Length: 78
Image (cartoon, rainbow, N blue to C red; front, side, top):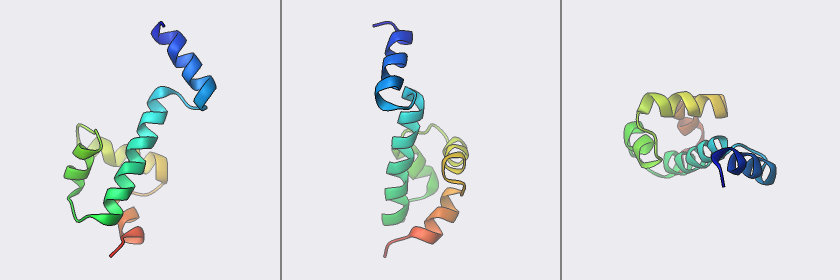
């Protein structure tokens, strides 16, 4: 498959572009780690596939409307 054909077929099947789907999965994984660990934001960002904490924070805020720290304070599990 060409990249263009794959992306189009993926979007039709899944309902999101491959990049958007991947970012959503990474943010969901980050939410789990934020809620259940005491790792730093930098460590969580790296573990979830983000090259930099700043990129992680920017994507997280765009997708959730909150920063990772704000989200963590509201959803932290003991």
